Length: 358
Ligand code: F6R
Image (cartoon, rainbow, N blue to C red):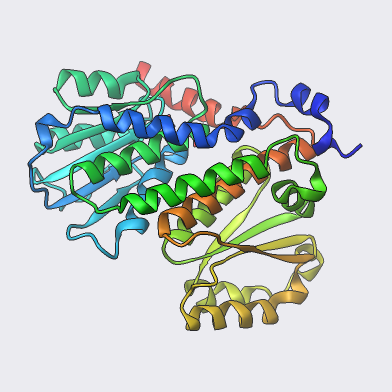
């Protein structure tokens, strides 16, 4: 039997139930909405900020990436995404700083938080606990507290959705209710279509995982929401499937990477190119995608186009991200890998923690 249809084997391999977490993504979003509605934004409610800096690494960092790309066309203040130790010099006390760290203990994020506090910035802290929760309590900062017990990347729904909704309630961004409803409906559908009981023949996520199989995946998105989503696909394939993966975005990749697919065919003939394609994309981008595929087709084992579904940016982003998340879990299981542990991340964090003891 195909391993992806063998429910007993899946249970055995996925001992911490990452697949279950993914299957429950719709409910995670509903809970995130409730969490956001209960956040006490009193201290920052009527402040006019001159910018928003969203901090966060890895699975938590996705929140900043996607919020910036979802809102950049309509927002009147800049959103800066910070993925390291230092805040940019222009972030001052008139900015809202939004540290997102699932564990609450990620050192890059905590370092930037200290800088934000010393510059007198208001904080909106998004976490399940740890040091970040303590900092928020000690400073009387606004806190979005999400449930603990998940891998950070498995809690992306809690982190991202509650953060964007709180920013909406604060009127920093505008996000129509109809977009939220559309996104939730689409995710509800996808959760049903991708669940483990749906056999491979009819399960698009299993089909894509099987098509990737033993190949080296390369993910292409388009500047904007689909670049954040392509990056998320790459990260999920790295962390869940323990598989190397590259990603790039149109149109930038046409100015460099496209030329690179010329040599090393012996190696790249085991690569699979996955292109996230939005039919509503502007014509010039569509031509770029079509022409690029023609130019580089012979360098790949196969090229898979993933059609982006939904009308609103939110529905497109969340549904395409969700497909990648669950594909990465099925890809792990197909290769008999437990998707949950991320030992190398833990080793790195432990090694850095030793520096604090000196
Ligand atoms: C692990 C994961 C990582 C973490 C990252 C930052 O599941 O997704 O990428 O998100 O190491 O840790 P947190 O999210 O706790 O700030």
